[in-house]
Image (cartoon, rainbow, N blue to C red; front, side, top):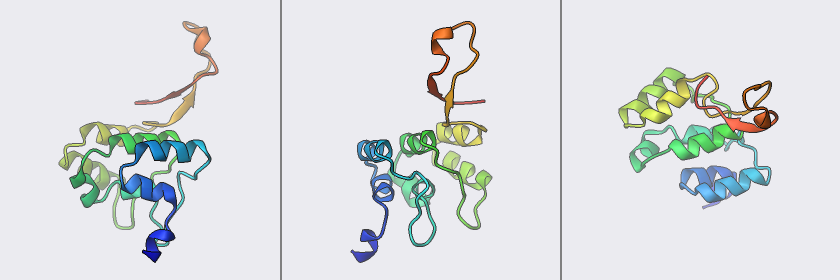
Length: 128
């Protein structure tokens, strides 16, 4: 439809559970925070009841977070509400990730004297 043609491809790949396509798009410079006409991001679409009912959103959420997606709950929903929804649909790991301050974010390792070979490398934080 014409409306789908106006959506960023990353949004469509996220909504349709196309993890490989999402990864490629992000590697090629897709904006993890791009929005469709009503202001929803690819990250936010993961937290609708319909998406939760279709299955696991954890991998898609982790991928978007690791590429810098911002967490902006939809109007009328709080972060706590989204975490509660994740738990209600059995997405405990995702709920824990969203509650963590740096959960899912890409970080650079610095000043690690025990393993100096890791300094300067990137990692994805599960918890802070």
